[in-house]
Image (cartoon, rainbow, N blue to C red; front, side, top):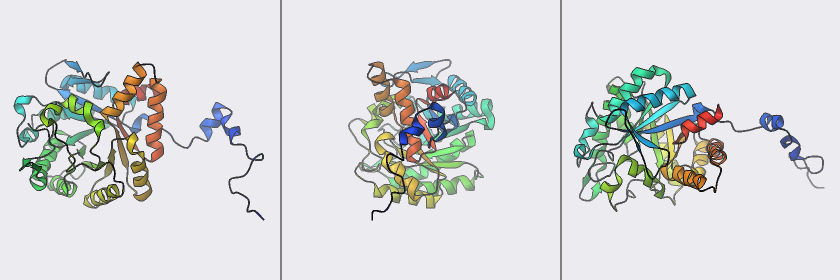
Amino acid sequence: MQTPSPYGSFPNTRLRRMRRWPWSRTMVQETHLTPANLIWPIFVKEGSGSAEPIASMPGVERVSVDLAVEHAAEAVELGISCIAIFPVTPAHLKSDDGRHSLDPDNLICRATKGIRDRCGDSLGIVCDVALDPYTTHGHDGVVIDNDVANDITVDILCGQAINQARAGCTVIAPSDMMDGRIGRIRKALDAEGFTHVAIMSYAAKYASAFYGPFRDAVGSAKNLGGATKKTYQMDPCNTDEALREVALDIDEGADIVMVKPGMPYLDIVRRLHDNFSLPIAVYQVSGEYAMLKLASQAGSLDERTAVMESMIAFRRAGACSILTYFAKRVAQWLQ
């Protein structure tokens, strides 16, 4: 005798019944999205009252600090949880060791102070920790003998994190992929009294082709030239390695772990969700943004429908936070 299916069988069970009406679809919806799930990345440049379009990212601009502060105020009104700041460092301030990252008057610190003064504790401020915006060679750390020197780089990253925390940053986000940096940064922050500052680790950051427009935006593409970051970012072929990276970062004190890029790596998000009880963020990176934006401009996709579907995909996979250049538009659509 055949064992009855625990899921029912046709014709007694008709799954389309609960899809018939808008109210029934909403009632049984398993995945939800709110503006609080969003983190809005912003590119900050020198100047005042100045915005500069990014050709490879239609609709996204590099903005001066005063306009970044206005964007932050908009984020609060829309219910967005955090702003993530990425500096466009002038070429004359870049160096082989990225020492401008330690300057308390650099772009990211000035933007952080301005946003904190305007928004107080109503908005999270995420600051990127890596040296690529500050180096003449475009790598995330100090290069010695044609290799990124892990431990020397981590020493500088600790100083960079403290510098940003002093400016008012609430979430330090190391994106460099150096070994051991989470534990060192956590100890450095705690030693300076910043025990309340969270760490969102770029724990599973892949050496991806989808970062191109971002590197254009921050001005590191020309510095990097034809070099790659494959010696420190993860191999796109690997999944088990992501579990090891995340386990190490959790052990070292990460509060949130991130997967980057987003949609090509939803399987990684799901594996982390199923294996760890820790908040997971995902970054819908510049290349993903550009593809959706350009396809919608060409009439191949409906922008709102496609973007919202991508947001739900991130949430369904297990991410609680989504870094996306569509954050403002998504929040407006949700309202």
